[in-house]
Length: 241
Ligand code: F6R
Figure 1 (cartoon, rainbow, N blue to C red):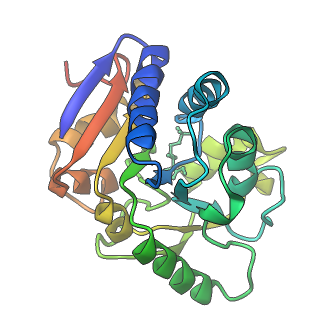
Figure 2 (cartoon, rainbow, N blue to C red; figure 1 turned 90 degrees about the horizontal axis):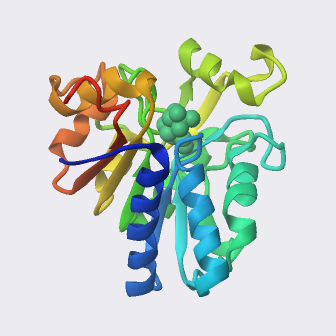
């Protein structure tokens, strides 16, 4: 894994945005694996600004997102579909039939997992953006998730629900389950860019980079991937420098 450390989140965001923009320009039919959460918002903002200023073309880009909440409905303001529209898709010229998120709304969740695995086999991300949870999760693959799992339904860890409660009116409103790419799907990406900022990620970052490869720290599996770039700020890097 190559590690890039930046003075602050702003510089980190710019570095990741520059790479994505360059790749989209070089390969207009690129498949991007995208994440939600607070980590990538600054990058998406820079992609939008660049699109407005330089008309970078997303009309032939395909996207696959990591995950979606179960049972809150695609059009709920806190669904990941709404998040992606608000923070990126509504502001660039992407075709909405080329964006893919797992379907957390259906009653047949097993079928939704199968359907998403099929989508992922047809659209392998050229670049997958990842954030990391304070407990080392990637996607919603919480500690203990077998590395060989594909898209699946997860019960969200209490820590994850509490971390995400800031987006809902109360902790009770935070969904209890999500549908997520499995670790195996994530590992299929041709290149992975993992982003982390802030001191609350420092321990997970340290374990990911230099701890044992263990299902107890899902991100540690990335040590086995041949093409991972880790973009972090000084705070997130404070236990490794
Ligand atoms: C989001 C996702 C999660 C987040 C992680 C970090 O699609 O899959 O793994 O990347 O929970 O969240 P933030 O960025 O809010 O700290």
